[in-house]
Image 1 (cartoon, rainbow, N blue to C red):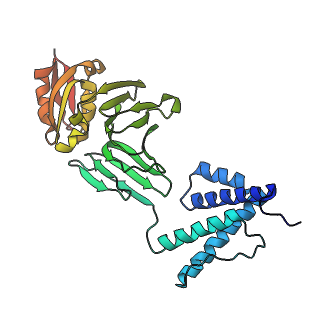
Image 2: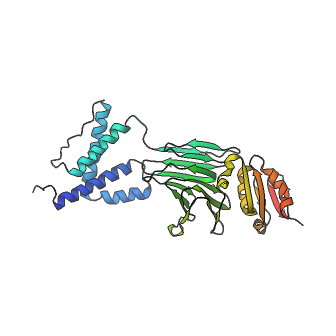
Image 3: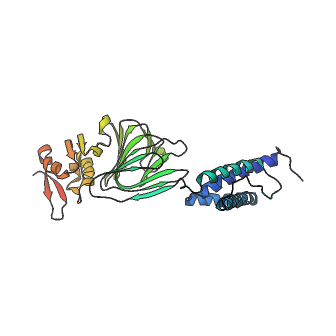
Amino acid sequence: MTRLPGTHSDIDSDSIDAQAASWFARNRNDPDRDTRRSFEAWVAQPLHARAYAEFEQLWADLAELQQLNRPVPLPVRKTPLWRPALAVAAALLCAVLALNLGTPQLAYTQEVAAQDKGSRTLNLPDGSTLYVNANTRLRIDFSAHQREIYLDQGQLYLEVAPDKERPLWVHAGEAKVRVVGTAFDVRRGQRQLVVSVAHGQVAFTPDGNPADNTLLGARQQATYDLAKGTLQRQTLASDDVADWRNGRLAFRNRELIGLVDELNLYRRQPVQLADGALGAFKVSGNLDINDPDALIKALPALIPVRTVALADGKIRIEARP
């Protein structure tokens, strides 16, 4: 029995074609394991499998025409029923083919290895600008559908180009930071994870649990204690966000534990606290990131501690007798 356009069955077919087009696009961009499992469940139904096979054949036809350097017309399928959704999707595929064949796909991957000193600036293909601090290791993974940065250690500052269709995510272990268009700083140390916002707004999920989502606006900072699982918020001066890019850090009433965590970005061997209670001391001053030991030597004049240089290059901070 021939179906008439606009009948319930025809509308269902159009919906399946739209789903098939969506799955086809997602599968061309290295889907993750959960996405592949969802696709396998969807394509297990015969009508879904047939619609998906039509899109695969359609793409193959278009690619063959392009290789022959011929014009790319809208192909006529052998199936007797040329459904509206399939026609629209085919036209979109033609447009994508005409624009993208012979040019790089909208995908970008780069690994940034840690370096002892100095910062780097990367201009990303989406128009964002990434600043990478010393001793920072990260991976950039952009696709046509998402923008993700994985921060393994260290610190970054990112001026994000707005893209509502592709929010940008920074992953730091279980923690996630989600943005659309803003400028913000993330520092992942051994003890703390710190997110600071210059302008715009970010959503910070420190433990991967969406229920613990924290919104941060301009000049706001959140410090997450990795051991205790606690979160502290504070307001910053506008020039305090990512001031490391200028080579000098200014800090006021900073807890020693956080200062040490940041100091270790700039030393080959770490600074250690002999007693965890020392971390509660408050310190104010300046740090020249090219000469971190100058601040270490000055600490006994600021708080009741002494510093001990160990043979392996590490520095131990002890309580003053």
